Amino acid sequence: MYKVKIEVIKTHFDEELAKEYGVEGACPIHKVGESFISLGFDKPQGFCDEAWKAIYQYVFALAHSDKDSVFYFKDWIKKPGVAINSCNDGIRPVIFKLTRLDSKAQTDDFYKE
Image (cartoon, rainbow, N blue to C red; front, side, top):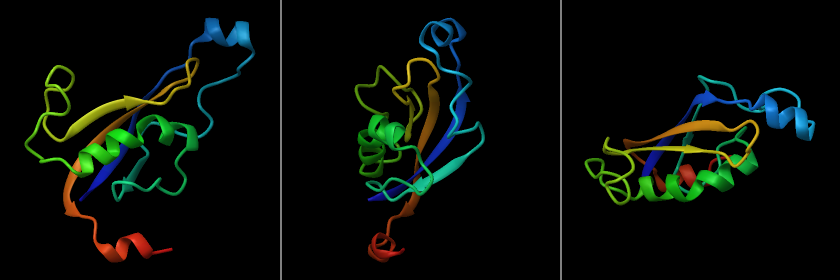
């Protein structure tokens, strides 16, 4: 299993929906430029719980993939070892770039606090 880098590459804010449903401002948790490392199954510290629920299966799949393989059915992402995902917030979604790293997750990494 390999480590996966999670980068915040874009945030959106739908003003029209926000006005109708009362949400103010963009995502309060993640900002463009942030990055996290996952061991393939763990939610990185400081990462949004709801965003993790939306992307964890892709992190897990990349952690177990061949770096030279194109993700899923070869009709989504053309770059090997990469996935682009977003959280489920329909008014202020955050877009993440997931990259399978060359470094393997070590058994000791699972038990660090």
